[in-house]
Amino acid sequence: MRLPQIKIIDLFYRVYKSWPIFYDGIIQLFSVGQWEKWQDRTFDDLTGKKILEIGVGPGKLLLKMAKKGYSVTGLEFRKGMADEARKRIKAKGYDIDILQQSIYHLPFQNDVFHCIVLTFTMAEISNLDKAISEMKRVLMENGRIIIIAGGMPQDKNIFARILFRMLEQQTLLKLERDNVLYLKQHGFEVTRTDFGPFNMVNKIVAVKK
Image (cartoon, rainbow, N blue to C red; front, side, top):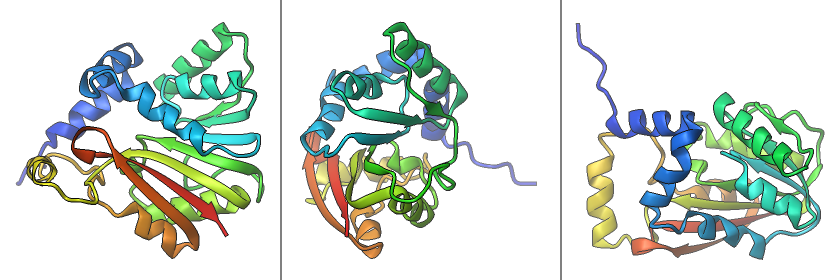
């Protein structure tokens, strides 16, 4: 009987994402203190007032959007993270819905949100076509999906190629998937900008047409 291969990166990823007490320190370490600055790039492209954040983590970006006057709703896959975000937001005096819900079955009517924000969540989504269909359904016309993600840079520089070759055997995360192509196939008008160390972080803005 063949034992299943343990994916070291996936195991580490699940552990730190399930324990909010470790989350902030680890992401700051791996981003060289830039994580929140990378997330903040979403503000350059936000339009309208009604915002859905998918994968809120401990709720820092969600709270920033609320403080700037946006009407925000949060979605988080993990109970521990959802609870941490609720606690953080309540402590600051805000009342924000944070739902523990699948991205494949969003509990909203059609054409509800001006923008949907995902930061460092895309690689976890296995059925991206289904997720995009749902996000498109709940977006208003000319609404935007704004994504900050790690992944293979467009220039496919040698450092990135070496790193991703090392990682590919240790993770099921979709780090090399062409998210832009998927969004275009669903009729979105899409732009992508790479930045960060060796261009391995990117921002995608997809407009519903």
